[in-house]
Amino acid sequence: MTPRIAILGGGITGMAAAYELTRQGHTNFTLYEASPRLGGIVETVRQDGFVIECGPDSWVTEKPWARDLAIELGLESEIIPSEDAHRRTYLLEHTSVEGPQLTPMPDGMRMMVPSDLEAIEQSPLFSEQAKAAYRAEPARAEELKAFAAARSSHSDESIASFVQRHFGSEVTEKIAGPLLAGIFGGDIRQLSAAAVMAPFLKMEREHGSLILALQQRNSSPQAPVFTTLKGGVQSLIECMTARMAATLTPANLHLREPVLSIRRAPAAWEVRTPAGIFAFDRVVVATPVHVARHLLASLHDEFGALLDIESTSSVVAALAFDREQSSQFHVPEGFGFLVPQRIEGDQNSPSELEPSLLATTFVDQKFAHRAPEGCILLRAFYGGASAPTLLSWSDEVIVNLALAQLSRVLGDLPQPSIAIVRRWPLSLPQYTVGHPARVARIEEIANAIPGLHLLGNAFHGVGLPDLVRQGRAVAAQLLG
Image (cartoon, rainbow, N blue to C red; front, side, top):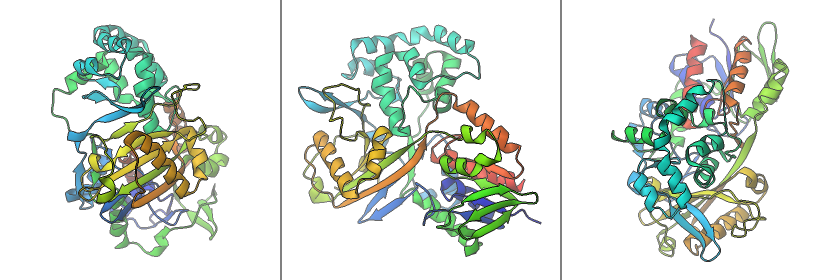
């Protein structure tokens, strides 16, 4: 008898698990999703020639699992790289004389690590002290390598501590802070270096100097940094759904049906929803971590504390401008800009009462096919401390806030032809210091509970490839 499987959560992770089960010929499963749609924060709006991402707009090219899935789904011709010829990122700086200014980050940087020290020397972004710290880092290679070797393999530190060790406090606050806030909506003084920056820790162990490691790596041809799909990332969800529809029945996919509780009974798992109590042999929990904590806390004494993983919310405001509107203002060449986290008491920062913008993407320059010729598409991103306030604001108020803030940077913006707002409550788990050890203990407990499988963006990565990999791997485990 094939096992009866419940999949809790219809985001990209749960969908990847369901798709893989179906692909392997196993249809004795039920997927429960509380919302009226599949995909979770993966959502694409296609309107008037614009392709507008409401959640993630792409994936990191060097991680293969999302691309592999796209090819398997017949989407190979839809795969497009980022327009890296335009890959310039700006930092928004506030000066008392000139007001908000976009200063480009030097070319050839990976995160806060440069491959070209000459570009650092020419950059107006850094003080002489910061430039000196960059110049000195390669010469400290043996010292840094010895420090890494002396650390326990199980130890962890904050991203701020790691970056400061290599490049000092200015680079830590000015570059690392905004970059990581734009991804996690979090504080680099709290985020785990081991969980978030594992490739850089590996560089430190092997080379000591991050700059020397990156220069060696850059000697070979580099792939585009980001990859997406011409019709939007939601195409992954749509194609998986279409493939499954040929085999499944409506009984397999339950939308608008939240799971209220789960219980390990002697003979089976009992899953309770508003429609009743249903029995399963195995349960895959692929919900947001705060929902997983609610469902699992009663199963083990430690789950309540271990799954109490802080998550921040995010708000996205997408503004699409037609040709006439786009002719009224200028966007500099690049992928967008980052906003350093506000320093309390800084007289040059925007009003403390106004929610702070974290980042803005110049979407039509980052990816082809995102806007009609001559049109501009911008995406403003809010998170961290500002997001809880914005969650209760109306779409109109959020759009006007984004317009006002972007107008200070890009010049007066007209009302857009399309404006879309999405709120993603508690969508960004914070990988704080100690996260790898926490996850190891969570998995140790989960593995000891027969038939329980726990996955999602709170554990081994927040990007699309990581979530696809998790979903498909758990399906293989279920069938194995």
